[in-house]
Length: 315
Image 1 (cartoon, rainbow, N blue to C red):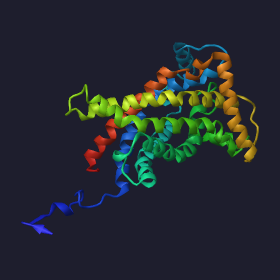
Image 2 (spheres, rainbow, N blue to C red):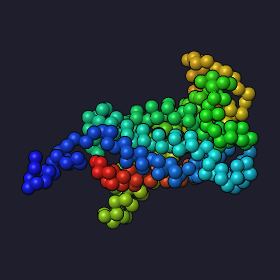
Image 3 (cartoon, one colour):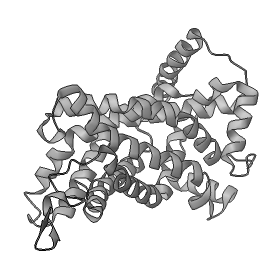
Image 4 (cartoon, rainbow, N blue to C red):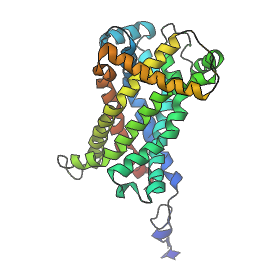
């Protein structure tokens, strides 16, 4: 209705009386996820190198890994090698988790995440991560293949990686290391969403009340690092497993229940191998960079998504 020639506030586009579509959250979430993926990519390259080193028989220091990577790909490699699949993977998975988490929480527990407990948030986040892990798997395989491509066989082309894997290993080859991928995604997502509000509230004890962005940044960083404690072993194992399998002569496998079971057993076998060679600490190879990567990305997401929501008038 009109009041004095002006539209009443309750019928404006972003008025509180008008129910917001669940899809309205996608643009700000996407903007936050893409910005985060871009900022964190160079760190991700180093993290991938550290993770893959866990399967080597000898220790490989960070500087050694960086020099070797530089010799093969040059300085441009730190911002370009595998950048396309990484941007797609990182942006897509973050959009999916932040979009599905509140929807899943409402569906499972009939209430908003703000009214949820640590356990309900962890369960909802774990369930919400299932489609994420499955769908990013082929992208993850192509990404790590490009980052570890010593002979530049694939010319930094993700499509070439996928085509070669399907041709020589079958489409099941795209799911090499899937057990580790799903564990990695589920454990971090559950830990992050379960604790982010608690860490953010804790930050308010040392940060002024009107510094909301800083509070979100610190809370997201702490929650991201906390999640890294749980998901690092899975990431070390799966990257080592993928590296070992992809370095071996390709074997074509058709889909079967037995092949899936072999993938799970191979995951635990690789974990046992790493522990036998390096002890429990071997499962946390590269943890420093891993924690930096996940803490940094968690911080940026916690700060940027609310910021973009505010800019776009989304609740």
